[in-house]
Structures are given as C-alpha cells and as structure tokens.
Length: 51
Image 1 (spheres, helix red, strand yellow):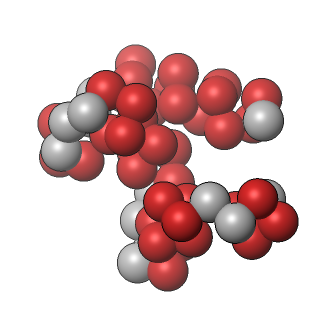
Image 2 (cartoon, one colour; image 1 turned 30 degrees about the horizontal axis):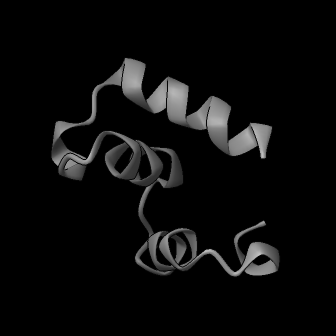
Image 3 (cartoon, rainbow, N blue to C red; image 1 turned 90 degrees about the horizontal axis):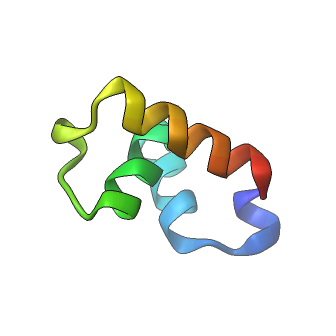
C-alpha cells in the first residue's frame, strides 16, 4: 500500500522497521512515536486499514 500510494511517511516507517500503526498515530496526533499509547495505535491501525 505504501509503495502504491507513494506515501513518503509510510515508506520511511517501513524502511526504518518502525511499527507502521505507531508511526501513523504519531503523525495523526502530532506527537513523538514514544508518546503513542495503545488506544492511539488502535485508531491509527483502523485508519491504515480503512485506506
């Protein structure tokens, strides 16, 4: 999906072996990846799979 959409943020997260849902949550909430909690990750996961 990241490759097809050419989404730089998702491609970067995959390239850096980051949890894509945590990376997405950090972008959505404009916080550091270390501040993402499980509820934020779950919502980001829903957003990622909803695309």
